[in-house]
Amino acid sequence: MTDLGGSLAVVVVDVQNDFCSPDGTMAGRGLDLEQIPAASANLVRLAEAARAAGVPVVHVRTHHDEDVDSAAWDARYNVPDGAPVPPRNCRPGTWGAEPWAVTDLPGEQVHIKHRYSGFTSPTLEAGLRELGATTLLVCGVATEVCVETTLRDALERDFHVAVVGDASATYARDIHDQAVARMGRHWGLALTTDQAVEAVGRASSSARAGDAAG
Image 1 (cartoon, helix red, strand yellow):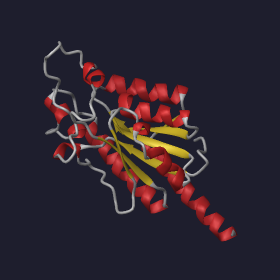
Image 2 (tube, rainbow, N blue to C red):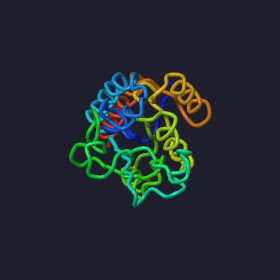
Image 3 (spheres, one colour):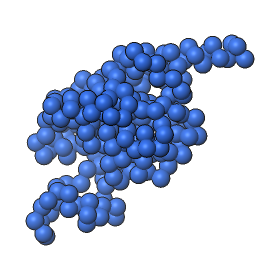
Image 4 (cartoon, rainbow, N blue to C red):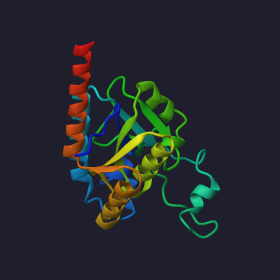
């Protein structure tokens, strides 16, 4: 496996009830949640490995309501003029906006966004720089939307990036597979959870070796 190098952080994107739960808004629209359970289990395993290794786990979450969703944003649904848009995902303060499977622990960063990219949050980049992160392991939901957009924007800001494909999910297997391949081809590495866990373990070993040398 390619050595990632640098200072790692795991970035967990939009792993929230509305996107992942059978009772959430996406399931209510009839979308297929088949990928969610396995991806959730891998996310938990990666987060636990990162925490054990001292690698930061950073949470990016979406909030939507009428105050932040513009006419242009709502127009992406292509509904007729005057027709209602589908129910908004992840309204602040609702169960749908709460984390699914992986919640933040005390001291872990949580960044709120209102668009697809995590870097539309006014705090994410500064938070990652504060941590000293140079290489991001990006995972979450949905693979070809918020995960990919966040990963691409991270590279534009000169972070090294890798998508953790089997710790990410969307609502159709072929779309997921195409997105993971695209990210690995054009913007960074495409890793499995096993490879990502190995990488955070090496990061921990390198840090201990550096401390011993110091």
